[in-house]
Length: 176
Picture 1 (cartoon, helix red, strand yellow):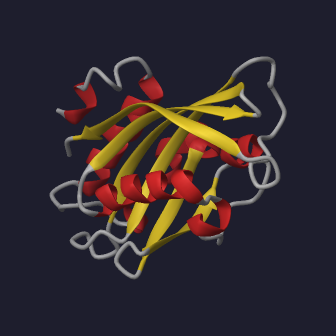
Picture 2: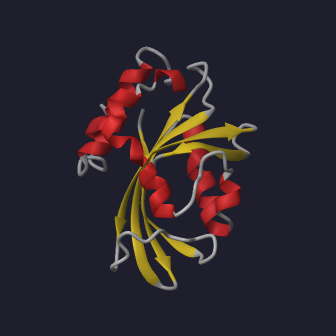
């Protein structure tokens, strides 16, 4: 079972989100937005985000982002396009992962964020596909864990006005 993957074993929350996703899809290829039961994830809602794929993955738009996601980034993501929030290598990297997900592959990644050559955050993320008709993937369920580094606890990362560099520490496909 995918939830037993060693890369997810170090955090019960990641495994729980994946187990919920598997239960929601049931006998279908993919779960739909309406299959998501917020009560299953009540304690984890602050760390969740949903994206929609636009024009077969040419663009992505955040449908919503939980309180923890917004607090760590320092701005509202809901209804904003990915390419409004990121550019350059960070945008290309995120789009690559999101396109892998809409092609039917789960994704787990660990990133190290630096700002002005100072480590500010380690970000662990699980991305899982969603399909409005349970057959054709058109969305992504994301779950993010944020660990502040170097005394940055509580300060949002203002990467729009003070760019960050992102180093990928790990990137793994999650068999579904």
